[in-house]
Image (tube, rainbow, N blue to C red; front, side):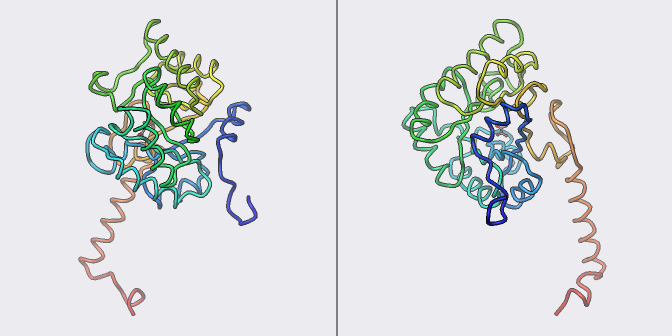
Length: 269
Ligand code: KIV
């Protein structure tokens, strides 16, 4: 605890120390202040303002349409709700691909909105942008393996790194991300054996999603983790039934209003 009663903010060096002492790092996606406060109270180490905001809460069906303005709004909200967790914000599709200059300009806006680091997708092909952003003093988290912003090129959500040649390509991506200056890397839909090898090779923490149990940390999309809808990807797990609990609460409220049981005297002036 700090002097102000607030828990100590998780910082980059804490994440590195957690890797060094083999303490698993927890990360969840998050898109608003209320949920950020709940996850902070649960001592989740890292909150990712992921562009999965697009498919989870905005109803877009993919991450492709998400704009920088939408990410700035969500990042501001999460950073106001979280006082302990390390907040990472995704650079959305179309806001960093053109040039390192474009990447720095977009990253600066996310940091001004309250993020402590930005995440972008791609390994070897993104090295110049990762370097430019870190040179600007902004921590970068890489994202390799299946990268949803390239879903059309990759043929949809598919495991990346199966077979020796494909595994070597993912390992090259991981090394390139670290050499460009990234402070961590998300491994998505990568065979556990390959993720384990990368985790051993790299000095920076690896955070897995559908990448087995050898990573330094794990990340899940919170709506999948909490069971907000009936569906979640096969590599995810529902740790609660929050969607059903919310539906039940709404049904009880509706019944109480329709039957005039609410508001009663104790809820009136
Ligand atoms: O946007 C997101 O939720 C992500 C996770 C899948 C890691 O990038």
